[in-house]
Length: 251
Image 1: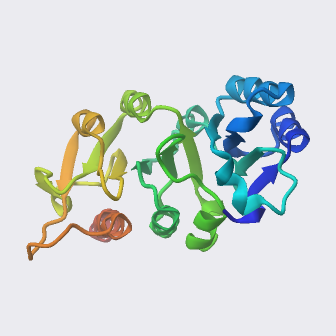
Image 2: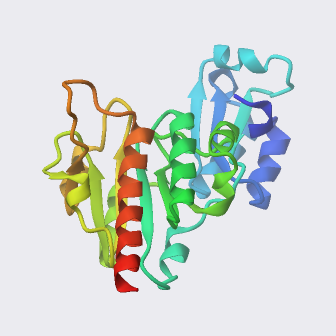
């Protein structure tokens, strides 16, 4: 963990929670500190703000041995997450979103964000659990692109997908067993959210079932599917190609 992407110590983390000025991804607490009243106060604050906390073995803190961490570390984000409802209030033009469903490698997350920004997408949605959060590694992998797109963190992708549908979004999931080839979908003249699944698990079954389209990238050889960031790039730039072609045809 990059030392610049954490804060540590009971007082520092308490103040960060009270002020709300730091975007906290997760709080790690040594199991041996569970009975500390100050730790219990932090847990109460974290719960009230919907911030994930996790009890971990004391060995997990060995890499921070030179820091006066007091048995507690908070992983912070270099960007302020945007609220989904705030994003949906903007009805200016058609929107394109990427949803990450269990993408655990921060380098893949950063790469996807960078591609989405270059392609003019409007937001990245990621779940607060079982997905890499935006940290210093993601920021570096994105080459700073995280500062040029709305990053939205949600507690439930399932509920988020339902809310997007109510706001006239079409949901497109990428899956190796998809029914349609990714280039057969018309990405123009509609709001859509593209779901990219985790490196090992892919898009969850529940989210596949909620999708309007499930698309695949055809393989000409019997080989493993593309890396998730490569697959995202292919689909994202097909949507760009179609939009550019539509613009050209209308001139």
